[in-house]
Image (cartoon, rainbow, N blue to C red; front, side, top):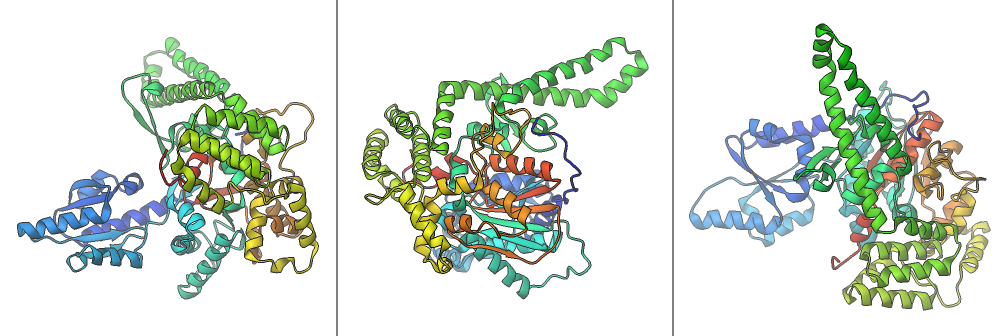
Length: 589
């Protein structure tokens, strides 16, 4: 199985420290307002807050009532103005998380309550979701930075790295790829210089750090996930490390919220597995559990007492989790069968390999005409565009017209956004993949290639998947059928059809300890690669700016087992193809 034992793996740091720091700071802020208080919480902060400080902790610090807030400025204004009109005198404090921006003060002034409130910051940058996953819970980062060009979150990521470096560093070597990664790196070092932390004599728990922009690899984010954790996310939406399993999973009339992490003994063994292997494992697990229950039959009273006090509770918990994951698998199977998932995967693999393109276009047209799903149709269009260096003008116009007729003309803005991001573009008249590769190849061999304009770098980054795929060997060419139960490389996370570009880059750079030998690949990706300092380390922090998928996490966990490394993932938010594309849509479908 893909989750075979770790080979001489180093121990991970205790990231629970980040939770304790965030909780202590929140408690300090609450104590600044003595006495009973009501707490109004932004909807998006509810789940992260619950992971840091639950209701009982808030009650201990005199929080009387909790309210969920949807419309932030208007709600604050209404409360303050209503109290003024009624002649009530109260203290109001706004806590901004993770930080306060200048625009926050402008909004308070516009709303006319600037002089009535005090404010503070809760520097809640990092939420550990599991032993090796830390999320900044900033899903807006992707749209704000890559689409709108808003750089405000760059500083937030820099502050987060400064905190991690002070607690678990010093980081001895830094690699990066992408314009955002470069900006974060530079800002982080400015913060380090302005607020130096004494790490002399401190043994680094994390040695290497790798920063990566999401736009370096859109293809991986657009592919259908087939590892168990990725499928659970695609089907049920994992939110803040937990998932709500509805009645169709629980086989009852109620939903259950389940925390998905390494503490779940069943989930931890199947999370990184290809879905085809999961049912077999769960069946064997059920037989093993039954065998443990059956041991009771031959026990005497003393043995039974020991069994009940020491083992029974754990077995019942494991049985409950096993039932839930079997229910989740059955639900996933039903949905994927209904969606003709195998045909969808076949089309994706054909696009990745560059075969049967006309057949793939026909499948996409049928998908659009049947109005299966606006997001899935967009995903296939974007995958076609990126792998084919943009769509031929005739195909672009035809597919765009069909999409707008099926899903509505309001998506014209969506097409504009996708074009701006380089996700769905139209080839210039007469331009083909070969022609562009030829141009780029000439430029790459030119000594002045490093001085290419940002515009051309952007074009190169968006247009050269086929060339990058060949140079990095992203499409495995092994003989015979790919064994998904005993995978030979990271391609197993996509059924052996494709090695995630982001993960392959990380593997290559770590092996070479630099970008040397990858010059042509970095040119095709638009440049902005960097590396600093020297040092050895076996724990690598990978920072994804714009979101990370569970498939990438599974692939790098596999690589870590193969190389005797441990990867820690810091992401602005966990993402998948649906979340990524939903952030580009102006009118929600």
